[in-house]
Image (cartoon, rainbow, N blue to C red):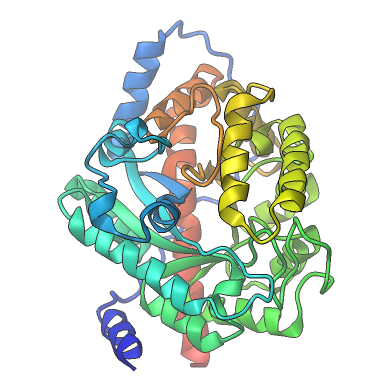
Length: 424
């Protein structure tokens, strides 16, 4: 009862939906201009920083809350984001100084708990992760502020703080309860990834044996309720069948919060071209991730083989699994992945879906290894500078950095207003 009352208090404080402001439709995918400016790296970076002062860079996925859980059992006193977390025994990719250096204007912090094999009984743990995010924002209120609407993001960015949004990673989080889903929304969650690495009871994952052929009837209900609430439907981690069915069902644009292009890296976690085209038609967005496995396919194959080996050695021992994978990443051969290859994924998505449908969703602190040149949250401007070197215009950079996501977020808000006007 105490938890329920706390959740209700948090929910009552939420701000009403912002009015939808129309954005331009998908472009005609013009050919990239050749860079004849001769600008130096420093000049391009200065230009990028000027752009990010005007338009917030919105990162769609960061797993720092998971680091708090697995490292220090959510004890804020034992992991200090005002310090240099790269100097820890097991370095992190995120801290407040590096977020500032990376010109991050808005950050989705992911609430995540590993799905149990029976997919049940985890909603309390997810509420605790949401609570951790709220406490983290409060503790660092000079730098962070909770955002719940598109207009909040813009207002907080103008104030000089980092707009902080809450994401739910994995539909197992709701314990098959629409009431829990609604309470997550009242606590500030603004997107939910329908699955994680395993199927949940109502949706198939990209990395599990298909069990439902996509979505179950209850899965349809979940998407309808997310649309009614104004919670974005996130299709990262889901199977291709689940992607297609969610695109059919959702009345609001959908997102991929941290995925890449399957045509360039053939892993089930990436998005095939036919889905990218449908994403464009539905006015959604794919936020490109920085995981080496999703950028270069050979790394995915090697890592999966090592994960399978460790799982057979340490069944039911996730800590030993994680330690083994950490050792593998730092000691074994795997292909070096470079910043330019991330830009290649953005180029491909631009070609297939259009410039209006691509963003950034790093997944920092949710994976081992690193892309050379994109090692941590301070390096976002380097990626955007590489795109400018390839001929992307300042207006293109603004769209990728944040305007595309803001358009999709506003569309979800407006869809909720429309649905709520006809049913509650």
